[in-house]
Length: 418
Image: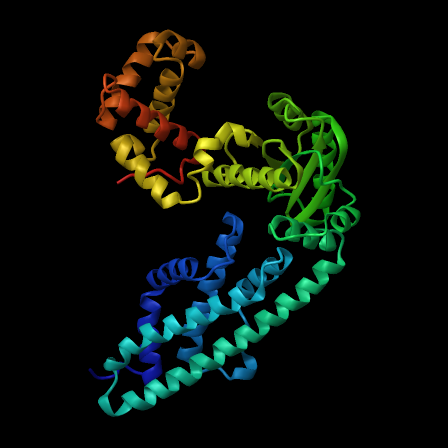
């Protein structure tokens, strides 16, 4: 096939540009499956995907324009992602491997378009493609490594940096010097712990974040009634981990904590784990808080209470790690009721209220401040959309699970309207 204009490299670059979204999605999935050590929350996953996207766009632009190497700069999203990873004490090696894996896949796909150039130009084109793509990937990798190392050093020197490193060692599950860790953290690791994760609203200026963290620590400490101290360790510039040393495993009333949090008007959200004993409880309670946070973020930070406890969402939290599988389950069980639209939203909520209130139309009507006949009509409509019968206990059980998932994780687990 004849060239359409420009260099043979440009012909390939234009073809690569047409498959950008598909390529980025495939590479992102490939990296997640191939590389260990890059398991993040939704914010870091978004930053990771943005880094891949900007790297791809920069590579295509470079191949099209053949910009002098001296003028090339790593994409801002790639550097931001490297800095955020450094703040979280993520090892550098997986980041570099992900970068190299993306380059290898880029070359593999680009080579398929070499057939579009004249036969006599194919070998020089392959040589130029390998050389030019290697130049940009090396340059970006070098700048990314520098950004990571500088941020890691800066973060360790800042308040909380050394504490974060000590906490990372405790959470890793490897043998640790407990006395040394307690001295560094100024927090006892025996006794009973309640862990939490706090993340501030996007509207909060960076300079106010630490003040919000401290506000949350003081409020939760007062509500839990501490026997020991509390520990606050920033995860990054907008999120922190907290631990509270409490009397026993009956610490605090979640309802009171939610009410106090809302009343104080704190511009943040909080997820809490269950009380746990000793170093094992220190780790387990945080894991539960992180799972609860994942459920909240899957459903969108703007939904529901600003305080969510693991007990509230435990069954859903255990499934939240694989959103795609959960979405398929919801679609299989709820059928057309899993479509994301306003009518289905109130049908799902009505059916959920009806089932949790022991299938009482009267109780559901009182809870939703609706007429009994309205509840009965909505329940019938919802079950018809599901394709199930209330007379089938196994089906009703699955429906109730799916509705609870939707309660916490919609719209992430719903189907888009046709």
